[in-house]
Length: 575
Image 1 (cartoon, rainbow, N blue to C red):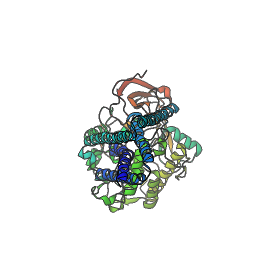
Image 2 (image 1 turned 30 degrees about the horizontal axis):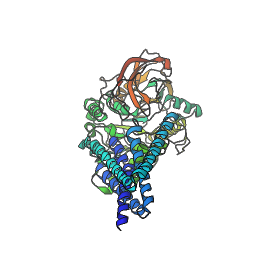
Image 3 (image 1 turned 90 degrees about the vertical axis):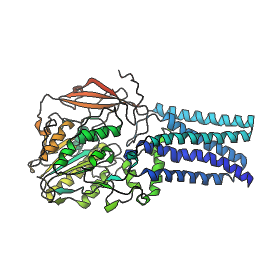
């Protein structure tokens, strides 16, 4: 028994080092860093994952301790080596890879090869040191060193995680609110504005979709296709908060502080709320601030302390996935890419009233639309609905029939999106409220076009389809090349709701083709995916936005100081 307990002490120390690193520290760090993206509560996540990691370590250690002493020693050495490799990858080799990634990040072959070479050097070096230590000082000394390394690695990571946790406010940790699907297709009989945001829906995808299917927009009667459209930003954040507030972001504030100030200063939602508009937003709660919660009618609460709302098995699977994304070498990271919505939906069980937390999943949205269809509420004078769909964002896996297809292109996904919206339009016509409904279809941004030389190499235009209230519902879609931008959408929405829009730039339909107009675009420039974002660069666009020669750098740029992908605050050469 004494011999077993001695071996068990070594295997337990080694396995705690490995499994706490692999299952607990790695996943909790990325969970804390992306906390606004997750809807499930912190108070359960940490102890569930800690208990799971301890259970795995105990079970494996107990089995290994039955092996012969020499085998136990070298298995422990390899186990500690695994913990060290994971730790070095997370702390020193991941660069800025702590943010959510929904697409295949284009790591260069050099990055992958260098990363593997470092792993190989660590493995060979560590094993050589262990062999030399055993020969020079004996197995007892090697055992002591392994246990010391295990303890040190656990203490260091514990300190780091506690520090990260202490940096979070109680508001960050409070997960009792969520955006539900409640009232998603309940509309007014007299006045509605439907605002669709198709993530990453670039003009090039729309034109390719039309080339593949010339009848794509047959159902979109009364619409205008504004082809000369520019977004304000090149990423979903800060594009979504901007589209709901009109307040610009320069990455000089932490995201939560920018969002807080944007909703505190912005008047877009307050203007609608003051006019009695039924406001429902179907996007991620992280794009909102508590200043807006009282104005949004589909925000619900649930008792976050109740464990019964969590699927523990799904939580463990999700956290293992997060941890793998952070600790694996670049060669294996593609196996662990993730987006928050599927994780939220799998971890959270059905919520009160059978309403699920909101997701921008195209398939689920389509299923709900077909199942629930459109309901007309005569007691609502006006309604505003914002639907943020996954669109043709990389990783969409949707074909032109709105069916799952892992081989679907972004053009196929765009066709599927427009098919879904066409079905929504048919329901509006069947209910007799199409003429009383304004519809805007745009994107949060076009093709992101990240480049290591910090300049655009193709023009990131985005889709812009618009039908005002009272448009001729028998007229086919028309095309306009008027220079329009996201700046024009605030007045467009408010005008359709009969609300004063004089505080904003003029609406979409006030612009005309050939107008000499300057539009401003903020490009989040990349140094590289591994090294992170460097600058917010300002472009001026005049004329046709599909012609890159009409895009000019103004010379205004800002160091990105606050972003999950931000690099050092030092200025880098951007010639």
